[in-house]
Length: 472
Image (cartoon, rainbow, N blue to C red; front, side, top):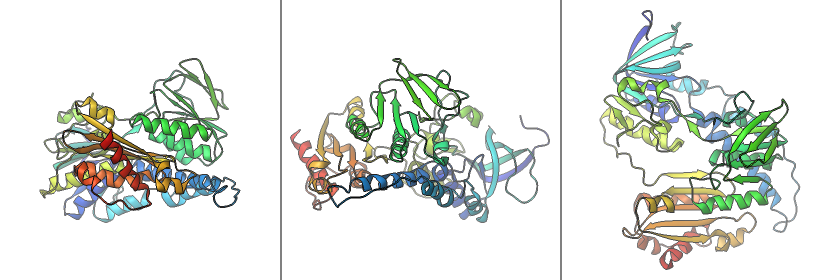
């Protein structure tokens, strides 16, 4: 309940959560002349610049350089490389995160005229948000509780937190999530990774390339379980060749920490030991903590339901992770543009999700867009697929070492268009761009067959996959 002494302030829009999407909405609405309050309990900018996309890709870039040096033999002479985590940790601290200081991002918002409240925001009624704050960033002292009233509406942009599974013995141990892994100043001698999704496999490969003995445990039947089975098989094979242990189809049953190391007992009885334990088993949120029930949104749901204008109800919008269409920075920013237009009453395309791109930044990269073959079949589509191996393409043969990968196309036979595709390879995420366009614009497969594909490029393997599609 709001205390009688709580201060009240009125704004046009209140944005709860100042990650990439929330910051974009708040900043651009201020620029449009609206009064905007932004609420953030952690760091302005969100997970991406401090614990996610940006620093992890710095780690991956460094790890991939080590791998490339190891591929020189037989192609360009010989090379010897000594891994050193120091430059990586320093670059993350100094270039990416400002030592996990969000002053620049906060000042960017307040410098435009926005009002920043540092604390936890909770919706307490239509157009009303209560903030338990440790200071707003504005001039003058702030009370412990502030009530913000939004005359135009509330934008929910709270993102997600690392999900920690209820494994016996795990609670209370000094395990890592992605946040602790990103902050690491040393590479552990050994690492157990629980979770073979994008975060788990990316960080597993990074630490392995810097010298850690790594084992990945995934309860589902394959690595990157949301992607095509061919992607999981590819990563499992490559990881095996690189000395990374892989356990799929088995869950962790118990975790113990003796003060020096972790022991993880798997469901089948196997025991794994590691100096560190990384828990990368997904993301979670709590609608109850946000108080969505106060505006008629079921607090037991995993995500906030929205329409194609990102409206969750009268005067309420939601974006990014919390909207449940993919925990990607690009999704949050995509949603932000729609919400800004809706609030300002300007024209904008409605949200659509048939061509959502995603990339797992392992080596090889796993880029994917739209539906997998299994998802398309589950939706009742008459599906045809085409597959081409990157190593057999001209560019793959030229590239030689590190050329693992494939192109997989998923077509709706009735419509004659692609509904999904996977581009795995040395630059899988970059090759994905033309496939994303094909799925998004519903370009007929016939037209894709009529294109000219530059030789010798990695994307030319798409032509071979189209040939396989035609004959499959």
